[in-house]
Image: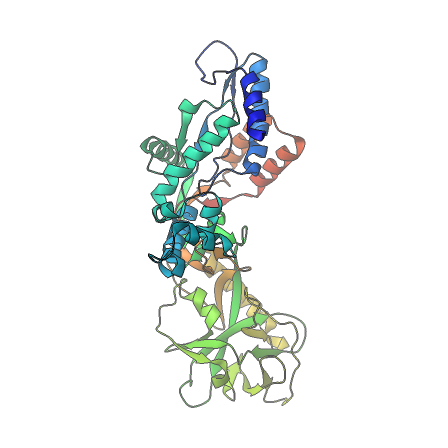
Length: 455
């Protein structure tokens, strides 16, 4: 019945040619952000598209020559990551093993009953047949299937899009690829492209920077600088002379150090780090081989911080308390410092009030070092080590927890004042709501150098 009604409504509509040819009428250009082709279009796409569609039709009724091109976004890691995840699912899942006793329809029903968001379930929920699933292990296949399905959807929506001016991104399309290269050559000629080192959110599995559109969780999360303080081990034995680095918290109270005895640490020739600190440091210039130990092995060790000696002793709180040997008093756990996973690794609150000024000077010094990187190396001062980690948890589309890596990076210099002024003039000429215009101007004022490529 529903199809009959739709067919009847469609029969009443008059076909309008959406092809745009040059004429003497006033020109009007409409664009829409490229929808990403890791699936079919959904209602949200059509809701947003309707705004562009209504404006295009309105301007056409006013006699303008309206051009509405359209494109499909296939660049970046999400498609590639989904294809890789699907390979693993097909390899690991029992229901995908060939069996003469299981019919394809039965396998499909098992997939549909799965919970969670496996790629195989997402694809089959979109109507992809079980027999076709293996084709999606090739990321190129996604770029062939979903743009065709999206085009069919938009044509049934009767948009004003000129389909002669439609394309996909990536270097699969040599015309689009050459256009992007042309744009970057122009930016380089205008001295708006620069190269340098940058701390970036990074996926260890794909070995790539993990940008916002590459993430399952953590969109908008940035790297944050963490200062670690040096704790020199004085006890004789395997750890003698090694430098244990832990988090430092500056406040006005007497100090304490908490080391979680249940956590894992890594030990190298010269250093000891909590494991989750090491997972970031190894992508920021730390190259020494390590072995893994339990935090309990550090209990009872004598150590020194800023010329003050301590003994690592068992505490009644979650972790272990380091107390000043001169005062011989336990200090309660306050101001816990937690990492992105919500666990305490090494929380250090400075012991000696008279040395706070010295550490503040070192923090300025280490900021100069970390902000002006010309090579991949660690950021050391006499008592501090600065590293970077995500400000909260980031999960890539490969379903891997991300870290921070120091990467070679090309930047577009959006902070260039001449570029900002020209962009503001352009925004002033465009048609926006007041809120949209304020948002664009605010973003333009905020943005500075921005990474623009993978290396």
